[in-house]
Length: 177
Image (cartoon, rainbow, N blue to C red; front, side, top):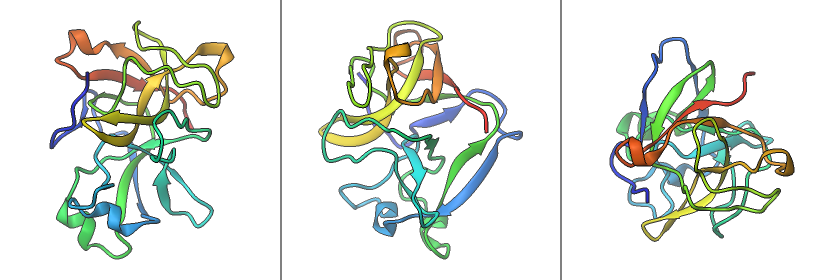
């Protein structure tokens, strides 16, 4: 089972070739660490029509799957530099190849919307984004992709299972822009 800590998203590969981009948050209150729905590093975001960051799936109900390409958030909860800049901009991993360890996942979830998912059980299994519950709170995190029967975009592939990685899921990104 995953847990949310101060640092939830750690690079394994070199991050210099990764293009990070800062985008304004649609809801700037999500940068406030005391907000009940504050964002944490490793959550998955997408862009709305106003070119602002929003969670890739709505966090109201566990199991809501993302239907669009998503990008991982690369800023720890409550960072003052993020909250202080104009427009409350947050960095996401925009382009490039990378491998990360994350705590924002649910290895046992079988999310059926918009397609049939699967529990995370094998190395090189595809991953998708969905609303998950960790410690009594909902986040946008990684769950297993169901393969050809799953209509959700693949955002990554498992490279190390949590049981062999100190409780963290290791993955590489799954698509290139």
